[in-house]
Length: 346
Ligand code: CP3
Image (cartoon, rainbow, N blue to C red):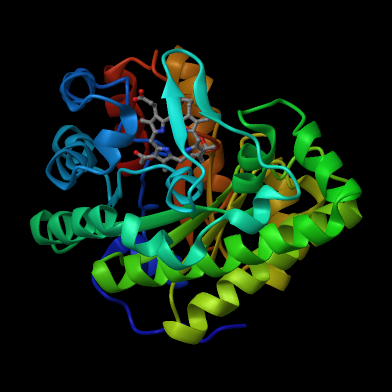
């Protein structure tokens, strides 16, 4: 178990470092986004979605928008997990109403990715962090992030989102050498990217393993745990004690093993994770983050408030960061977000 550094005065970072807070600090996954009219306004004038990610003034502005409306304890860098393939020379485009679109990689094209130049392409994202840091109140935590190697690989190999990740799962089985080479590239580039984010002002970083679903235990260990473990270790070689959150969505019965083997400080829980199971199987010193169903926030009212209270009560014995169990959705009424924060913060 890692020794907890001294408290920093930032409640969310302190919870991440293992210091239990009186009321759980809160942020909301995908808190900058289409449910906010002020986001839609900036998004419309930015041009493409990636133009927004690569324009520091605008990306900084949309990062800060949710903190002006709500009493949130953290800002999360506005960017996307798919800037990594884009930076590696596999262009990404976000088609209206379709989500991300890429030209899928094959075994040969893995070798033509350009990891040496990737970080140069991401300089605007680092400038965004510097701007956010300069504008953010002292007690707020600034979160950087990247996608985990497997999750990013599912988009690079499938060319788009899919419900079963079949293209990537088959590629891993049929082309193990090219798959291993791709994961190696993603581990190294993602580690250097997270280190650059920490140096540019991020207080902590989150690794989004959004597609930790649909894997048998052997595949889970090989594609999820081992690359996440290497990524965490590589970041900490360069920034010792870097505070890191892992969010292996769908990990279910593999959650405790994921947390133990990767060494993350914070374990993000999806909303399907039963509260009693989490509190019984996860070590009490591990900080947990989560895990309200985003659709409960859409529906709002008494069901949302009572479930939020159950989540807070279930993790009252350990450091806890309140969050949704996946990203906020565009149809969420803004008033429900304020209602939720009132329940958590009293
Ligand atoms: O406020 C924040 O949380 C910061 C910004 C952020 C975005 N994407 C902005 C975004 C973060 C942290 C992400 C992470 C991300 N991106 C993940 C992991 C989290 C998760 O939800 O599981 C994944 C899988 C992606 C890939 C991605 N980006 C998809 C599948 C899509 C299309 C679906 C959608 O929600 O539209 C995106 C686009 C995207 N990324 C949008 C935003 C605000 C919407 C695009 C728009 O505004 O036009």
